[in-house]
Amino acid sequence: MDPNLQSYIVKLTQEHKVSLIGGLAVIAHGFSRSTQDVDLWLDPMESPKHWLDAVLKINSQFQDLTIQTLPNWLSLEGGELQDNISSVGMIRIMGLECPLDLFREPNGIAPDRFQEIWESGTPLADGTRLPSAVELLATKENTGRDRDSGDWSFLIAKSRREHGGLLAGAPTSEEAAQILNSFFDYEVCRLGLENPRSEVRELILSELTDLASEGDPFAKEIIIEFS
Image 1 (cartoon, rainbow, N blue to C red):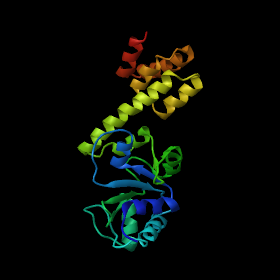
Image 2 (image 1 turned 135 degrees about the horizontal axis):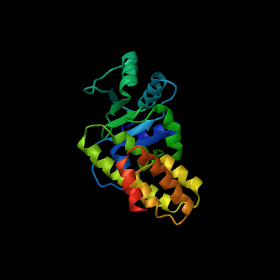
Image 3 (image 1 turned 135 degrees about the vertical axis):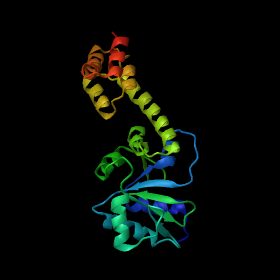
Image 4 (image 1 turned 60 degrees about the horizontal axis):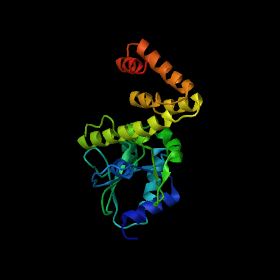
């Protein structure tokens, strides 16, 4: 089979669970920027060996594909490649229209969270799933790359708008608590304090009061603003 990127992704998603991450995922969330590769998070499976075997099975159905890995995009094979996957958490497939980076363990997210994030993701036409903006935030932290800093700024702003809006409209304190547990942020709290239900506002203020008692200046500022 010709080394067509879209065909490869479809083959991969027909046999395995796959989430879209990286630049294309941020673009899918509405951020306008370019990207030169594709990043996918492939189900981590039981071990690096099982994971690599699954990739090699897909690769065997295409022509002239090679595998590279960090550092310095080395070409490794066998047990050496498995060991590298354990430490680096990803490989790069070369020979498609652009580099395809497959992750077993993305930056900032433990492999055991894959199923949870995949299940909550938005299904896309190619069979991958798009994680929420909040889930993608961790993959953009502490990378030292300017582009990731821009992605993070976009994702944090979107997460704040979405969760702040949900909190401002939460019908019960129980639902408000779930929103805060999924993404606690000062701007989310500030937006949530516009909720017309007193029990929701009291919950948010209680959380902020606990933080303020520990000396948190941002929590103190919001409490003063809404007192």
